[in-house]
Amino acid sequence: MKVTGLCVYCGKPATHTCSLCGALVCDMHYNADKGICIACAQGKKAKK
Image (cartoon, rainbow, N blue to C red):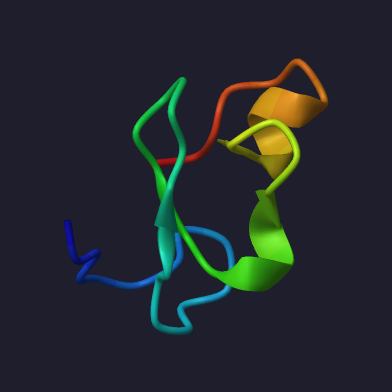
């Protein structure tokens, strides 16, 4: 599935979707090991 939209953190083109909260995020704001955004990785909710 292709991700289209902008990163909720920086506004750059999103390349991933967080598997927990569904936020669209770029590579910089994505934890690839866990498949989640940086907010979920820190136990916080993403700012959608």
